Length: 331
Image (cartoon, rainbow, N blue to C red; front, side, top):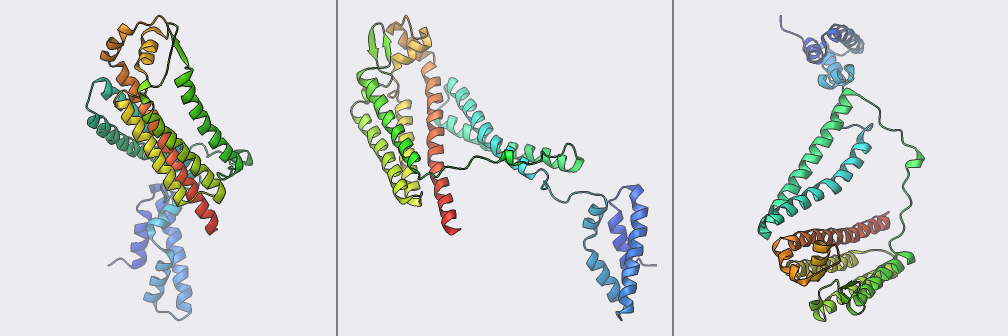
């Protein structure tokens, strides 16, 4: 005898349940389906139409079985979602950049070509992003299914501080003060100096930067100041100011990295003095041995990575503020 639609539906529902549940669910479903079909028959529907309507109303048997088994049908539900999302964002900010910096440093120490360093670091960074997303999501998906400690209960104590308006007076003043302090530090390093070796003032920045490259630096700083003033006057970030900010960040990073790669940014005497003798009892004859030992190359990679990180954040933050301002205007 051919199985009816009801038999097939019940079988599809119980087949994924644990054995001790199957018989009870089978009996419960058979009774409820029969009662629902009987009610429709009393309203004048045919037997086939009534059975089909009842089974369609019950929906996918897999979904129904998940309800009986108390089995979630989502990867990460509301209980753990925000914890998963916050942790994932934090790890994606820290882990890939740290691994890329470590890979770049290791390749630099082994005197690998610049193209190989960049390509390998980027490839490893992408792989790390994929792995972080996969393993963090897998852990939370397992927690969702096997239980465990409940997610911490949210309270008002977890509210973040109110964000300060990026177009406020304090933001403008802070930006101008920082830029002014940067210019002052460069001038002080050139004419008064921060380091004294063997009774002589030795600038931290390479003396060859004056005057051409310092004029370029001054132009970038004045451009940053102009962006800060424009943001304050408009009371918000815009696509234009974010674009200008990005161009300035890229220009600063490009110039700095080129100067670092050619050994024209930091005074090599300063690096040799610190590395070889901790800043004291320095002899310039040791400079060549420090360079041959790859010390300068390692420090250059670390300094370049720091400059890239700062410039990348500066450019990203401008667009982030512009996007928020656009959202507030639409709202």
